[in-house]
Image (cartoon, rainbow, N blue to C red; front, side, top):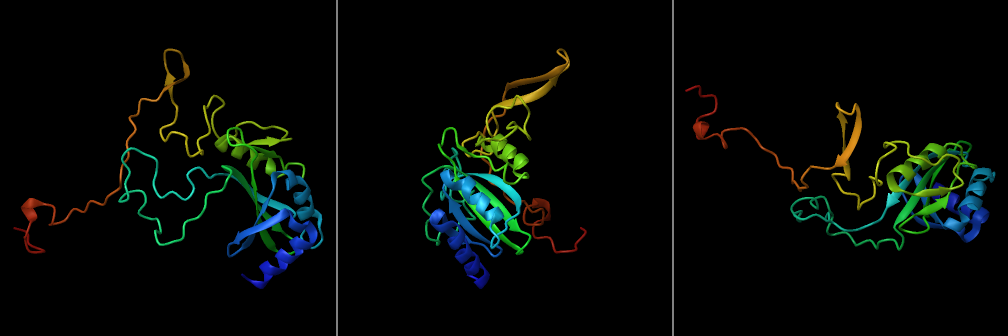
Length: 232
């Protein structure tokens, strides 16, 4: 942990007290948790306190912790030789959070040239909800609409909470981990009706494990054991 992180942690403790809990750090930002009930009050302090001055919200994104820490996809035929090949099985297991959905905000202090990662867990798992940050950082507007569209996270007090990436008639939230990989409906243009129509998907779900196919002498019977460079 660098000295700058320790200095920022001490300043946060002085300004906010125990409302922020440090849960880790990357190479460029300290990472802290805040309770949903304290989000707005803490956000204002982070923006206005002279020692902190996080004037800019760079990004706000949703997170779905369903199945967190599992090394396999919940599919019919995936195996340890397929989708889990990149898992570090020697690493210590990480406990899954008690709540499913969270919002992570990336904050930047232009005054002090440093960053802070702020995470808040949403209230409820079926209909996750958290306060909107639009009144504190105007840039939160479209970020929160994106999180609502893709994760179904509701932001209390948002001035215009509606879908921003998917179609108005889209069903579900595609970044949720329990959303079907093939979707719920498929879209096509019907020339007879002269409009776009929505229909149940006709794709048969299947799980594929990528593999590399090399075309060389080992796999061509007519070229097998032929010397390299031979033309006959």
